[in-house]
Image (cartoon, rainbow, N blue to C red; front, top):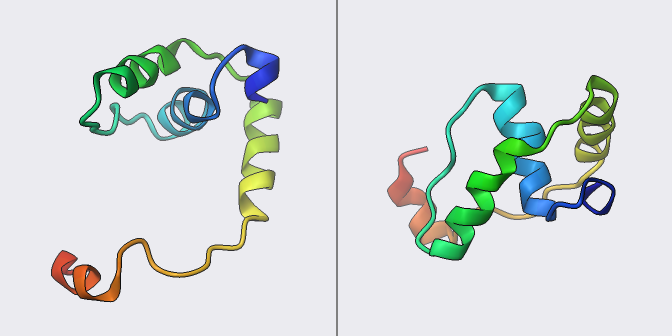
Length: 78
């Protein structure tokens, strides 16, 4: 999808799917080049069919393990 749209995979995830589907602002980053990449993601236009294809693909990803090591996970309060 990223290649077809002339974008990076992160831009598809952010601008093409996540931001447009959830009406959210750009997530934070500490690197200027990532911020520029993230901001450019809002210019990616995906059709509803393309968004549906991304949702189907995402639903097939098996999540393994936690986001953080257990000791840090406890600190999140989640």
